[in-house]
Length: 240
Length: 240
DNA sequence: TAGGTATTCAATCAAATGATGGAGTAAAAA
DNA sequence: TTTTTACTCCATCATTTGATTGAATACCTA
Image (cartoon, rainbow over all chains, first blue to last red; front, side):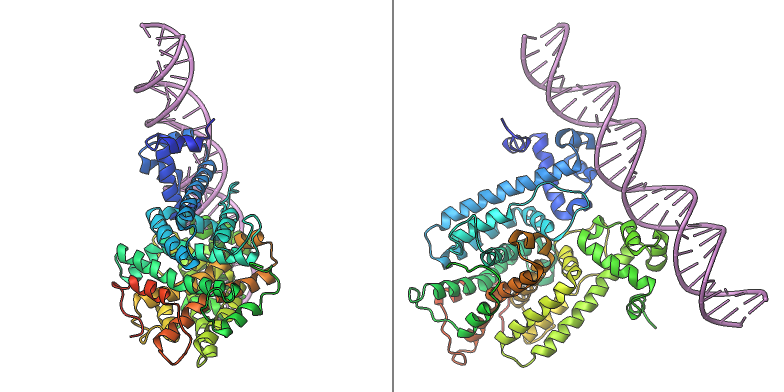
């Protein structure tokens, strides 16, 4: 008993799969309203009625795209998790950033779609969503920010979302940022990884050093801790 | 000799200004193609022909919105720069984050529009753009990441863009993130500020400590520096 | 091979959308 | 007062867009 989506994934040459692949890319580039069924059909080289025959109406196709991206993203996160399992937090971040960025730059429509869904509304009602809470919870647990992936604190969630947003932003914004920086693609990707590591690693390594007092000897600038704690009242305690 | 935009700003009660304000919000929420001239006109309570009379076609109105947002953003950045001028880097970041987030959460359509422009294409050709390079250059100079605001290194630009992206993401993504976290608006804003400080401050404070060797005694985890330098070949040297 | 099933497309629809023309109105200028 | 200017809306167009129908074709099965 296969869902239409699984069927399409099974055989990438099938019409269903070809339509889905093009829809994924175009919805990512132009957003839901910016993409017309005719654009998709034309790019695949078919009539719009064939598109509707396979995927129903535009909403249905879009929802299939969202689920498809969710599958891919979940699978890749599992992969990364397997690779970095057991390493130190710093090493985990290092490797995760490298691997996730390689993956996302190979499939930029994933970042496009995820961010568009965060930031923009649709006039039509869409019934399916990206599994941000589930994924974020898993990552939070994997990073030692939460004990239970099902029930991470808001603070832990936001930290994870910062990481994911930072990654997606540079992938999805490539068309805007790269010409601005005058870098070729290879060097852009390199610079993005470097920048993400520069920004993300110190924060989490310092936090870890702080919570495991004595275990990791690295000293911390006291002011940072003060600033971080100052406004911490309303959200639950991280990593108690 | 006033531009139509200046005229509209002058008197916020004028029809021109009312249309612009609604257009700003709706373009931000639904994107260019997701917003129809009829939606805007209806919200203002006028006929679409009145809208076209004042602003020309849809493209013209959208470009006016982009320029308007550019003005506001530039003005606010100048304000922040004035307030934090002279403080330490850590204090500058602290205060800038607080003030910018208060401002952006008061005008979320700014973040919406900026991010949509980064991440999404438009089928129509739009002739005006957000002044990301100019603004980023100024911020880079203000943060001591570049000596010349006109000519910052790619690495410095990317660091600044990380900061701005992080801010915009949480403002623009409020509708998506806040229900997920189950926080009221006030606590969401507080948690966002806290998270941004947690992520951003350590990286830049450590970098400053590193470049001014001896001036700031804080020691650094050696691995971070290695990872940061490793891929630095193609981009210019920061802060030489 | 005959009959059925799955797939594709040309033709066509209805609604949505961007845009305009011209009549009407109120306020300012002469 | 008369004239001009600025503004607003109703009616209307042409195009785009999402979607369907029915005929044609290819493929499969008994």
